[in-house]
Image 1 (cartoon, one colour):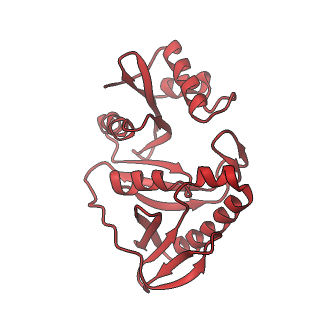
Image 2 (image 1 turned 60 degrees about the vertical axis):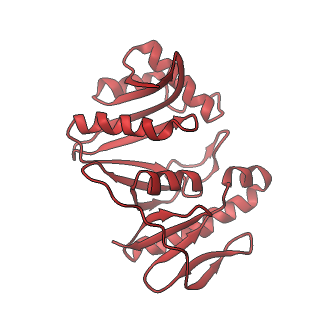
Length: 238
């Protein structure tokens, strides 16, 4: 496996097509023109290659505050972690001390990757971040969590078991929110993509329910620091 920044227009166009394929849309997720402008402005699109095959890509911008904003990332299973480390190496080479990006709060596997595998922290919940979306992966309102990844050290992930009083019920009739008075736990579906295919209405109910937990928790000074294997976010005070 090799990783390198893509700087030529044909290569950038290939990445644009790759992003569209991953998001199962004929529309541009990020166009060739946009990706080339990002590169020209000092950002980078880093590709992951298995031989000549493009198996992952991520695009980031260097920000005025000295951080990197990761705009998008997609990869074949098993490639995401080394690809993110390659982006981290690029960012550190510019002197960046942290990296930020957003993701869908209902996608448990992404949450576990971000919070447990990388050791990042969720610091913000934004309602309908992009406005309504309609591609092969996303439909309806686009709530997003913002992740902050410290590039100067490593946070030891911990995964305390959900405990305490059940204070809210999920759309599937099972517990949604638990608290022991100090920590808060919030559950999401194990596979929201499948829920969206099987029952779009229930998927909307999940979004609204999880939104309520996170918005209130962040307003009270919490951040999300863990995701269990069975779909429970762990939130604790800053």
